[in-house]
Each structure stands twice: as C-alpha cells, then as structure tokens.
Length: 420
Image (cartoon, rainbow, N blue to C red; front, side, top):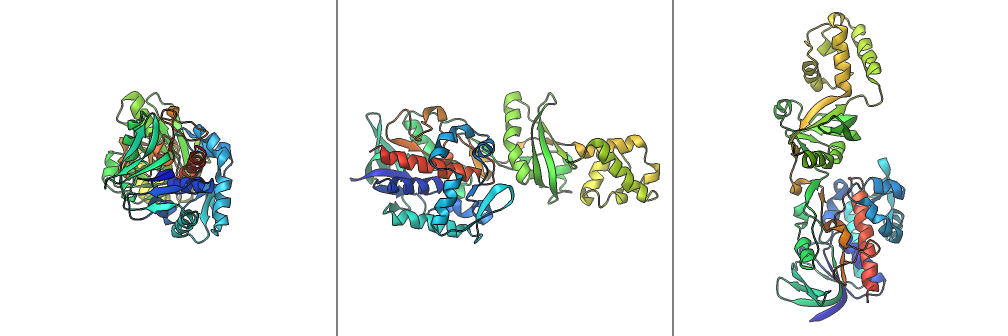
C-alpha cells in the first residue's frame, strides 16, 4: 500500500486549495477525484466567469454568510479574501472588481482560473488521481489512516481531508459522498436543504405564465412570518418564472422562506415586492397622481406605462380592485391610495423552493460543533479534516461561498501538513 502524508478527497475549489497548502507546508500529497476533470464546479461558477472572491471587509463577509459564517473567523486569519486575490495574481491571473465587491478574472474566463490553480497543484508535486471514486475512508484507533477506492486499491496517510462538496449542482460531482465517511468517524450531519435556490409559488397568476420572463430591477423582496413580522429583505434584481421567482434576491430569500416553513409548519409563506424601495407610500402616491394628471382622459392601464412594467400593470390593477379602463380623471382617491400601498408591498404567496439538486449551495452538513475552527480537524477522529461545502456553512452568491471554500481548504491543508 502506497503511503502519503496527506490525502485530499475531492478536486473542487476547497480540495485544490487544500492540496496547495499541504504541499507548500512540506507534505507529500495525493489528490483523488471521482470525475475525469478537476475543478468542474469552479469552472461554471460566476456564470462561467468564476467569481473568485469578494473584497468586502471581514465583518461584512461574515454577514453575507448567514449559514454559520462566524465559524470562519479563525480560517480567515489563515487565508482570507485578500490572500485569495494575492494568490491568484501571483499565478498570473489579473483580477477586476465588479458590483458589490465581486472579483472576477480580467479574462472573464473561469477556465483561466481553473487552469492556473491546477497548474499550481501540479507544480508542487501533488499526485493526482482522477476517475477514481473512493469507497471508504480508513479509520483505526480513533484516527484516519487512509482511503480505499472502489477498485479495491488502498492508500495510507497520516491525514485525510474530505473536500467532496455538498449535494447541489450534482452534475459537477457533488453528490454527498463525504457525509457517510464523516458519519463513519462518529460525526453528525445536520439536515441538508437547498439554499440560493429559486422560489416556488402556486399562485394562479404565477401558474398562468403571464409574467414569465419579466425581470424587475432594483426592487426589494421581503419574507414575512405568519404574525406579520418581516424576517428579511434583500434589494436587487429578480425575475418571474413559470413556477415562481428567481434572480439574485429571490435566491437570497429562499433560505429564510424555508426557516418560516420549518418553524411554523405552514406551507404558504407571504413574500412581498417593493417596487419603489427609495420612496415612502405618500411619495409613490404623488408620483402616480402626477402621471395620471398628465393624461386625465386616458385609461389608467395605459397612463401607467413608463412608470410600471407594462406586463405587471393588469395584475396590479386587479389586486388593487381597479378597472383598467377607468380614466385618471375618474379614479377615486381611495383607489389611488390602494395602488400606492400595493406598489410598496405587492404580496406573493410562496410554497417552497426548487430541489437541492437545483440549488447553487447546500445548506447543512458536517456539524461544526465537532470541528476545530482553527484547523478544520475533526474533534472526534485524529488526522481527519473537512473543508468546503461538506461543512454546515452556506453563504449568498457573490463570491462568499467560494471564499469560504478556499479559506477552509487552505486552513485544512496547512494543518493537515502540520499534523505530521
């Protein structure tokens, strides 16, 4: 049986970075992946452009990782977003900052990032095995001892790093392989659920498809609990689909929708869209009045064009109980007020989300109470480390999850090498 200092299972962002860190700190490293190509998830991230990190300060980064982000403070001490930027720029990957602090390669090609990272892994002498699914992690006397492949071939190691990802985007190889190996070492897996995932609504006006494909720019989407308390709001862009809502702010609200469902046992959860987030209801009412007064003899369904998305006007008028053929001159003040209120809080009843396989990120994972945040080592089994999405950590899209993956990967690799 061949022996290595460190074996890394999984060739995604966290596994590749763990391999780099372990090798840089003097370990002999074997990187094993069940697929034929390393970095598959990295290659499709950021819409194929690879959002490598986000430049926000640490406190803001943590705030954008609502799923146990505080666990990452120690890992960020070892390798944070600034280190990630320096790492890739040292590999010859020029980066640029875009909206909301997102960092992309100047080339706009994820392939350049993947190639550079794999090239770094190879340059450090890491042994790579692809098309080599792992059957089990080998344990003895309370410690990780190596791995056995499905082929029956076994490899020994002083430390094993599980970097197999979650269960989202399974076409990249993330099919939850690491969870049973964690459980075999005594770990508990918190409930898995989809995050950063489109929202499902069974409202008739959604099912009709009349609004399918309509995008709303710079609006606010909120999630409400059954007592009428606002749980969360996110501002940005969204899109209506044939099944519900998608787009950045819908994805961000999805996990909070699930929280309401889990805590209350209710299926239907109220969301609301604020179409004029910079204005108070009275100001919106004034805008409406001004628009209608410009063409007092025109039907309000036509007068409102230009102020509101045209495809949305019939639904809004219906919800406000207004006849679209009414002229601005004949619209009662109460009707104007009702419409203004609706534009500030247009209700959408949600009934869940799309599946975990359709999510961008997996919620839940290896219980963080059983992991040392300073090293990513198991508190239950010596020489066993975890990094990336297999852990119970999840953030918003926008460079936050990949930052967590790179940071925990580097931390795990560094300390796995130090374990020797």
